[in-house]
Image (tube, rainbow, N blue to C red; front, side, top):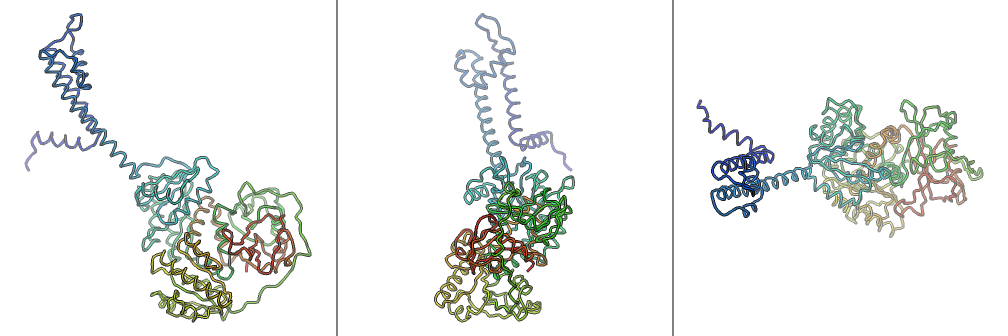
Length: 631
């Protein structure tokens, strides 16, 4: 093998040094400057020695200083005497200085541009502590950020660090355009892969108070989620503190894998199951989604856990009426077990924490006044007898199967569901679902639900419930547009025939909710927003995970909107203390009411959650009391 020549070796080493960037180039310029000054100073001393004003001969170091001044300042040459070899040497030094300074300016400019480019790429370490880390990017991020901003409003310095496989500047611009001011919360965006442990370290998860994983827009988002969970929980074996990770799976079948990947550090929400259950519950009791939205966002009333030693030894029933502006809904024991709507005689033990609904944690305090209860206003009525129900489902998506399975668990024997859609995958899925149904009969018809003739042929007035789903075989905005067309036809048909039928619709984009209000549908479900709100709540308070698990568990107590006539006398002025007492005697917990006259009025749609119990309310035949109950 031929050995490289010394010149080639030197050239190789020089090239390697130059490739190290601006610091190496500046070092070479400094060396060249020193060499030029040394040579010029030596030549001046040997060939053309200079004298000062007193005629004394200048030394070597004086010549070096003179040469250095000529290198750094080309204007110095104008003060030289225009004769002799000294002028020639200084002119050469000045020209060399011009080249050196020009090169230095170019190198510094290029280095600064490179540094700014690196900063724009968002690859620098986030030096924050107590911040919230968000991994991934989807439409959920705007809801998550807006809710975190509301939650952090009382903090002077809060931070949200976002890591996504997108351009840093584009992320910042989009957040600013859609959300505007973020008040006291600083938003830090970084570019990186949420499944790469090295990239995840950029947002400093070790010092974060919580980590939120967003569902990606890929064809199989749960696969990406599992990889991200593994990267977060197993990517840094040297850490000593556990993480608080919150995420949601799009499909229930992927929940076990996500829990295995996240381990004990992750709280995983089954978005498919929660949304399907909420859809079914809402179609059977309008207004429920508004209640959940109010509970889950940080703008109104939220769920808090508070320990109250003064209530130790008291019963849960007594605690229900002990707060005027907060609603006690359950007890959490020291072993973190949650008991929503326990029997009224349940004793509150030392160390137990009350689960309350309140406007803010600062608003939770015992009221010393005596509850005002009007006995003659309380009524005791039985429940409606179960009867078969008919449900019409228009449209189809991946969640439709879960909706039907949940509906099958709620309805009485003899009930049926008619599915009308032109979705290409619906027929095969319905055939498989038909064998899984226990009490619900399924019927299927292929047709376009935006066609007025199709809707008129369905005789929609005979149905107890109508659900309009967004199809997932078209873009989200087009799906919402088709849903709006269907809802407009249904409203017009109801006005012309005088028939009344409850309609619950699913919307893909919450921004279209305002447009949908003109259709006067009874309720709208925006699944991504509700899941985003739940993620944010659990990220801020990990203890709420067990509360939500119990709240959405069909085996425990759930939220219902029941006729007000079951609890109090109609059109009789009463305080909410009386309503709460009536519910307590039925083994339920009253947390609010809904006025039918305000059902179409945004933003509360008639829902009054956690009202002041001392204020007077007049409930009518069509109004509802919002309660926690087992059925």
